[in-house]
Image (cartoon, rainbow, N blue to C red):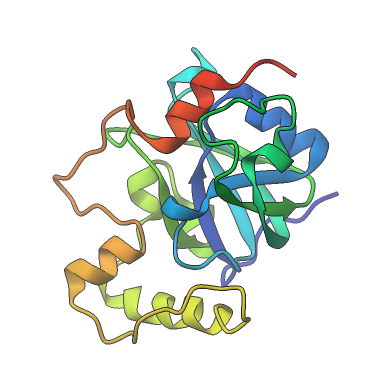
Length: 203
């Protein structure tokens, strides 16, 4: 039986464009992120997947699954989706994140008023307690500590170089994918991931 994240595990909550991407994650064991829109640190313990409106009634606007991260590599969209050679981003660079088996959360984490979403860093402690996406946001007093942990993970050569942790609060929140209270998300329409979702065909 798969174990849930420990309280101190680092988790990247990421946008999952379509049900087909969930099948790719489940069957093939990977998830893709365009390099030009990727978060700064990918060396986390788990990915948790936010499901947008494309998942339909009963499954949209929530996090239902997560998976342990095994590693990542640089590739192109064409190498990942060989059946789409004429896609406008076919030759763009993507990160392929290798993941372990999907794990269903004991209860879904609902979007609430946060429906536009790209990524968010959090921890196992927050994940275990969260009822909504807003509950996943690390409290302001703990964000420097989270960013230091992420910097420690970014020591390997393939990672981005990350700035020093003594950052302005607004900059730090942005790097962690955090929207403060009153900055509610809306359904994504023009994101890179949404454009991908529209182009994907069923497996």
